[in-house]
Image (cartoon, rainbow, N blue to C red; front, top):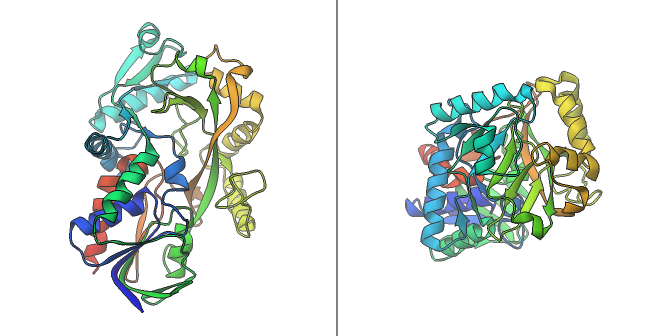
Length: 397
């Protein structure tokens, strides 16, 4: 039987940074297990590429604790590795007068979190982002950056490859018994398991008797690409004032390091953990997803019903356009070139409280540590977040 001191399940950004952190601390023999033929084929390789400054998060949250430090660490890593990265800045606008208090609240959160941000009026907004529209005020975050996410994953893989970590791709964990994982080639024994399986993290945790009050509820994020001749009119990123009662930031515009401009994402319920198409990826988990959605819909915490009707309506290109025009009025239907990117968000659902979980969640299990809610800004935060995950794992060994 193959044996390792640590097995990390999941080759996304969290799994890669955790494996690297274990190696840096000389924690013992490490195996990184990934079910796909390449690392980062799901959330980590499909994310927006935005390095968030840390404005959105309640000061007492793990997200606030790690985001700004993580962003700096990721920018430093990009510079060290020659990874494309640009500090383009972001504006958060008030689409209506009702959004003005939210913009002000975000400013207060930025101050509480030690984040550089400015409240600006409509005149100053036009100087920063000429095409953006706001009601009365907007929030400007000059330190928000964009990065080539796939290049980050490749650099981390190369770094890990030069260490003594055993990387096993294209291998799914079939079952977990005691201190062994059974895969197609036989069992792998471990001293401690770290679960960074993203969309499948709850399944791994449940197999070890942990986190049973939680389940992953996938949401589909669809982006549409803007015509290249339109892209030059955007300087940075334009976001709406979000609904702070739900863990989604709303349809926004963003730039990529390749110079493209995207609009999105939606937050549409998906009926499979890999349901990237309309029907493709729908799996046997769909009845459970439907029940969880029904529970949210009935309880209606944070106005969930209204949000879901709005998001589902954005499958229609006309409604999607209306959401973007609330930020950038000049855009027309012909400016949107169809679907440019699709991702799935591994959103954690608390079955006991019947609500979506807003913050990062880590749970301990028998000889295991489980990262159950590594949603945005997990990519931004990953390098420092990995330090906490490893601290927690080592404390239990």
